[in-house]
Image (cartoon, rainbow, N blue to C red):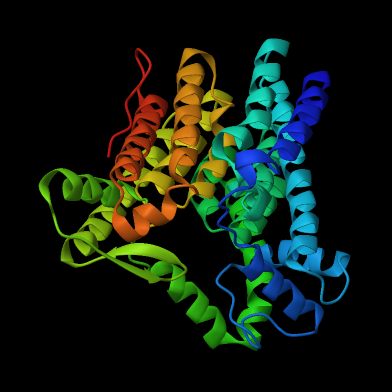
Length: 399
């Protein structure tokens, strides 16, 4: 684990750099919302009942812990420091878990070192957005679940995945892959038990809030599932470029905590993207379930499923790319090298407009930012294609 320790030191240095220079300028932060949630919970208020929350229940601890650490009525700067330290711990955990997963895959020292270094340097490529978003928490949970699965701790792996799903819904796309892995290697009974463990964990985490405030939980869920086409998605990128080159009329509206494109064309694209997302995910799950339960196929399928969820979703916030980092670096060989290189390019492209050009994009449909959005999103499509491209004599993913 020397490589993991060295990468953790590198990650700490990267985390420090993100607080200075141009990284510290023009930040668009979510921590004021997190602090409001955390302070309310520390004051004894019940989430979803006494105050509305837009995130699932397992996200709540990372909002409350900084409020518990800092003094009552602390400034946002104090909360930011405590929250940032918590996210740094999650980031370091991701490095260790990636190293462990690769060791279980019998990777050599060079592969482990390069993968850990990539995870450590990824925040530098994506930018300061990682400091003020909680996405390293579900990413660490997913990395932990995958490491446990490779270690043969199937039920604990599915339980950890259940916590991840209850923290940020995207790990749900991994559940069929995890269950298929267990089913293939341990049999149907163990697969169903593991699925039941995941479902049970989610139920335990969600049910108390649902019992206390069914309306509040419903409103939180509805807020996420009914979102319009967010500005940085693949469909929006295409419309933004068409606006630039052909004068297509666009209207931006702020709602659901983001800036979105309004109108019949964006609404139609949102539906189309959602349909494509479902079809691609079904194809990935079917491809994996019908083949051997091998680590490399598992790594590819997990990275591809999350990539499909990201690139074809109705929302594509910059921090979503954090989800891909600990999965893409696990992919073996030349495919893994190409996939990691594409992800690195997408991280940098994202930072080129967010946060520095974001408001010019949202308010004025800035030309440079519009093209950067589309190129980044097409880069994610290319990443998905690389992950799914069949090897010789391997059945392609059918959708």
